[in-house]
Image (cartoon, rainbow, N blue to C red; front, side, top):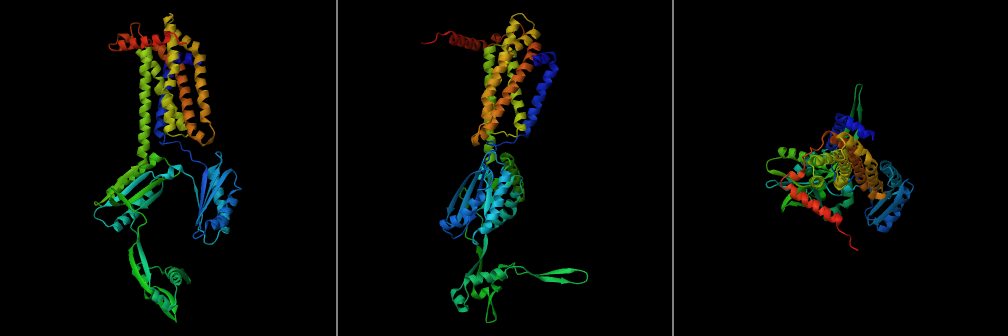
Length: 524
């Protein structure tokens, strides 16, 4: 084969090609994102509409059915599922796998905007969201604690300092804060006074809403400039609510303080957060839909480290859970498995080939094929996840097969009396077609896996592509680097692994076991 002859005749060129593959592979590896699973999001959209006080039948008749009719005409819709509850309507729209979700989501929003005009006036504005399995759990969970500060002081620090800083982190979509102690102004109306002045609580609420607002008055103009006039009705001090006029009776104004009592206090808590039994403020940080889990988690942890330096000394910011640490730990375990598999493969090859040079020549195929595979992983837009790393771990044994066959046939030609150059050329060309057939048979098995249909096929797409690329790279190395090294770096005539103390007995045991297995008669 011409590629083998070129490699044998130009050893520097063949070596530089391998070095280039490794360098590009390492650069691609450094730029790869890290995820737990491939970035596969089901093509599903959700529409949620709140209709307070309505029965399930009324929700279905006045909200759910108009939503279904409006969404039914969108292209690419596979299934529409709706549920009507008391005071709420939920609709899910499933699209086909080949649908353009960006365009589909825009179509859904457009149709919902049209349908919203026929909703009852008491229905709340609809919420349209795309299904995102990554955002079902927070990327980082943190807690703010203090032994000396009040819950209100801790809540102010949490809302105005910590939550705002975490919200600005790249890749963060939402920061959910729990355990806050919020301030509220409570108005306790006196029923006797309300009856005496013939005023209802609804009228008080309307008057309070009208009075507690900034109102534009008009425009003052002269020959040179215009000035906008506004009446500022919003109060800055909660005690001023008692002096606010909410109604008039017999030409006299009625203040809010005449109808009840204004009290400032903490709102009844809607959520409670504790860490090891101690009160705290909890932060659940969710990432954006297309953001990387590990990158977002590391950025959040870096922001928390900066916050610890800026917060008061008696306030403690704790990292409770970081999903990025779990993902990194899991992938690190897969990487260890990959390295262990490669070392065991090389050890087994050494025990059967009885030559450390032959082991090195064939073993070089493993790191080159694995590292070069990262070029394809990065080019196809994949990430380092369970599927791509599992693909490399499972195909470790396949990557070295071609190199072993080529090397053994070259050694056989050397034993026939040929020089190393002729043995490398003739030995590779002799079994080249068989090696190619074996490799392409493996590719024929894994390529269909990469193009399986359905949502499961989306997960296995990186797996099939990674295995196929790694096997093809190992075939290329077997036809280029292995013959070149065999022609330039032959085994010395006296070199034998049987001369190594401690290894000879192990090699004899392996040979004896292999001979026994191959020569034992088959049972009927």
